[in-house]
Image (cartoon, rainbow, N blue to C red; front, side):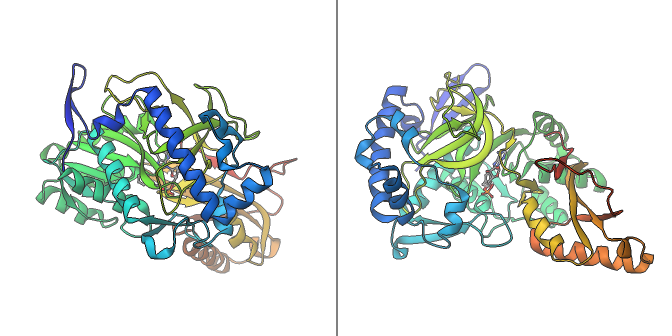
Length: 447
Ligand code: DLL
């Protein structure tokens, strides 16, 4: 049922709000709702999830001790490590029989993080996706072209169901095969593109190469997310594709896309605070920082059944804005993320940890434990170069053998990471040595 309403706004024209009741609560109403939902979530996790039982016991806290939202700061954090320890279903708060969908994080090696949804969770996820897609201007008139990969990744399914709920026509295109994407986009007259921002530029590059004029397309809006992107990149996408490019944020551990999204004012992404409580902490000390500070975003789910998260450390660095937005929504806005407090890289939308690369290198005889990762953006595409010191035998080996060595490393890297990397062998002892922490990553993308 489409329950959105029109809000006339002089700056950006008519704008719809999908769920005007929940998106426009006053701060007092919102905080009351948050506290009630938080308390019942705490009761549930302490009843059903051993990880939380233990954490609360260790801190000597009981769910009943939380009587204000400020008490949240006393509660333990949840980290990716907790999810790894609970692999695969240890963090679920309901029996598997009640779980109707399973997804996982986009980390492609080792054990991924497994997340589950009950029927009610899927319904709220769909509602939240419908909210941010409506905020970005999608209506039942749109033809939504989903170019995220359908699979364990939450991106495609999240936006797919959101668009259907709005009543738009969904094209479940999935990722890859840019020429086919463009053909479908032209022939089916797609009006809204769902993808990573970098893939939108890859499409623009391809259009230029094969002579497709974006002005001839029906495309008018883009819903981009899953990786960091700059305002500069937004301008480039908008100019080259002739669309309005909007940002949306989420992470699988907390739900997937639908945690936050921009309205057409595009002054930060509204975090759906009737479903999540957002805090900003100092990533080193864990202290909660005052409003307006830059720090790590911590999220608590307050309406999830299968996979509730208490104070999940997202590692994403951002800032929150509480001033009201002209769109009428009261929910806090988060700035575009400024990076991550850990060292995870996102290359072409795939999460890559330097430690994964290290593991590959360390298994190969001849590689020294000195390496550096250089990330650049060539045109619209991310490139990763792994520079590794090798021993003298390999470095001075004949060209053919050296090339075979590089090929072997590249193959191992792509199969471990799920994304290609170029390998460059460097002379023994030529890498900078560091005192204290080594600087492994040189990111030249200026995101
Ligand atoms: O990327 C969920 C998603 C799908 C969001 C589609 C938006 C659209 P994960 O694969 O678990 O989930 O990766 C989550 O990606 O912690 C951020 O570091 C990064 N990320 C997601 N959205 C944005 C964004 C999905 N809009 C990790 N801007 C998060 C910057 C983003 N980074």
